[in-house]
Amino acid sequence: MPSDPTLRVKALESLLVEKGLVDPAALDALIDTYEHKIGPRNGARVVARAWVDPAYKMRLLSDAASAIAEVGYGSSAGEHMVVVENGPKVHNLVVCTLCSCYPWPVLGLPPVWYKSTAYRSRAVIDPRGVLREFGLELAEDVEVRVWDSTAELRYLVLPERPAGSEMLSETELAELVTRDAMVGVAKALPPAAGGKA
Amino acid sequence: MNGVHDMGGMHGMGPIHYEKNEPVFHARWESRVYALNRALAEWRKWNLDAWRHDIELLAPADYLRMSYYEKWFAAMEKRVVKYGLVTRDELESGQPAPGSAMVNPAYTVAMAAVISRGIPSSNDPSVAPLFQVGQRVRARNINPVGHTRLPRYARGKTGQIVRDHGVYVFPDTNAQFRGEKRQHVYSVRFAARELWGEDASPRDSVHLDMWDDYLEHAGS
Image (cartoon, rainbow over all chains, first blue to last red; front, side, top):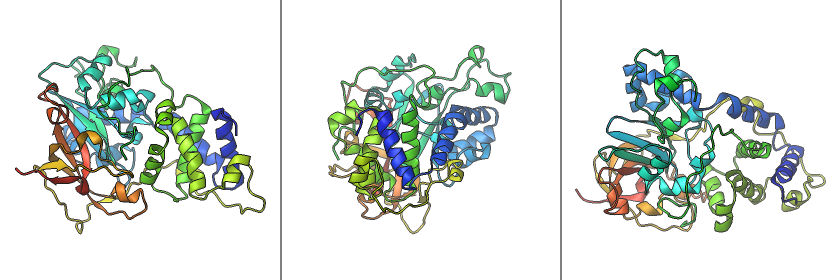
């Protein structure tokens, strides 16, 4: 067998296709979905909705899967979501120390750093140091809550709505919500930076 | 298993490397591995817990050295043989065995459009919770050689139940195909100081999701 992953993967795929075990068109469709349709923009729309609609926010915090399904993402039957809310004195951070659990329907597939040994090992023992590496220095009186995704619940952080964003529409607000803010390694962008991230 | 994958709280893994504007996949083969993995799962020869355990069973040095999708692929090559989808000879030659039956793919284009992990859970009232929100609990000190979702850093530590998530399949038995043993899963809050000692911030905490079988009462 060749050692180059490109050749080895190709060899296994063609074997599986020849045996009728997989359909290459289904692989193409799935890849297209994750490269072009599912990603952090989905989660950003959920967050922006929660910022402008207090009743929606209540539903999101109590039954996240159903509230996310309202916006049209994921499946309330198949996905078990928990949304945790940041505030002036509470900051939430999500990790999976054992593997790479991540809320795919709202954030897409996780970035390499989220799956890295550095992030997985350190987020639980040194969350403030990890956040500092991401450029986020939290005051001593802010409580840091780390969520280690050890079961089939998937966590999404509801970031604080940035100051000065009162006049923005829901669509404009969604532009301020980054993937990193929804994992909890950053805050939402200030309005001036909106649309550039 | 007390494997290298269970790395919460370990030191020495270095700084976090952040890539700006990271693509979903870094190479075409990564995307093929991702999709092959999903398509093969549809044959239902294994379950999610057994799947995770296959990756944990990679040699520790390989686990640390390999990239994410290299790990997926290494486990996949072993898995397709282990569960009888292809023979070792077929894997090595890249050719179907002469006269082997052709089947129809289990995973279809239509399925690729539906994003659901389909993890079974329920609020099955016939499965009673062993613990209640607000109770003090201790994570049991267990060291199973098989799959478990109770990380080492929490074993023997005391926390508080903050939420009952309902009933889920128990990974420790499910990964061994020894039954689903459905039971309640709770969010348990552990103070950072309970886990890491006096140097940790007095305010901070780590929440873990824990099955009934991982917990024991810790008094009031």
